[in-house]
Length: 282
Ligand code: AMP
Ligand code: ZN
Ligand code: FE
Ligand code: FE
Image (cartoon, rainbow, N blue to C red; front, side):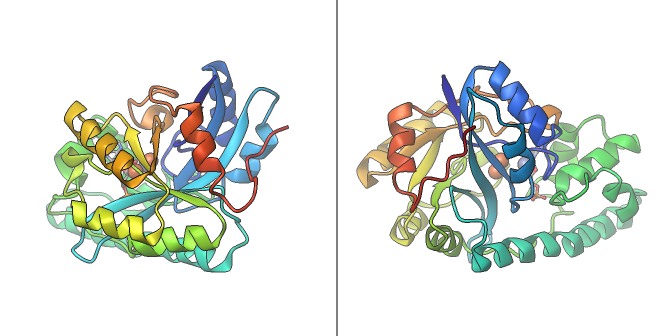
């Protein structure tokens, strides 16, 4: 009975609805599934409705953060109270800012002579979803500019691309603090996925731990064996929980449900650090 704490649905850049996610997770032998759409809790209700005996839901969100020196950091917030105003307002600000940011990316791509519009991108977005570069990637695929999301990212949309524009994001320390104040726990997602762009230094890691970070996502497709070993060492030294997760995006990425999972003892250690029992079961 596997525990997979990091997945996406059509409420951000995944391609399965929360209902499809729950059904597929159950079929894949997952007993505890984390729903962590980017900067949003909009998929929670549908996921809760879709729950069946045999699978429980860890409600969460993957919060897009940025360090003062411009490094992108993703913090998984799990088991927080979704009525917490400060956290919800921060997520809303990020979601809104993603629209202006998309307009800027599109205008840079247009300047390079590629015809793509905001309308093309919004057509790829499900109702109520957080807008992201994957939707632009899908629009570029539809236009025949690139063959796949992956090709769109490698050729045009990666973090070091000339088209790249950042959006408002809280610092990772602020996100960790807000998650904690909302009663939840925080885990830094794929912290050493170096092929995506710059990653944080050990010093920044220390600052996140001081802010109250609860765990590190160690087992993830984007980590090399060396990166994993470094993270295990760090987690042990700092007494942080170690998680593993798929970061499933449906057809949007190759990642398969349950391809990496969290050990039960680690999960129990993480869960007990939330202010209340917020795992949902039926
Ligand atoms: P954004 O949130 O708009 O900055 O877009 C970043 C998101 O794009 C990440 O969270 C990933 O889910 C997705 N992404 C990054 N690289 C790729 C890739 N090579 N193929 C598909 N999706 C990707
Ligand atoms: Zn994503
Ligand atoms: Fe991420
Ligand atoms: Fe993710």
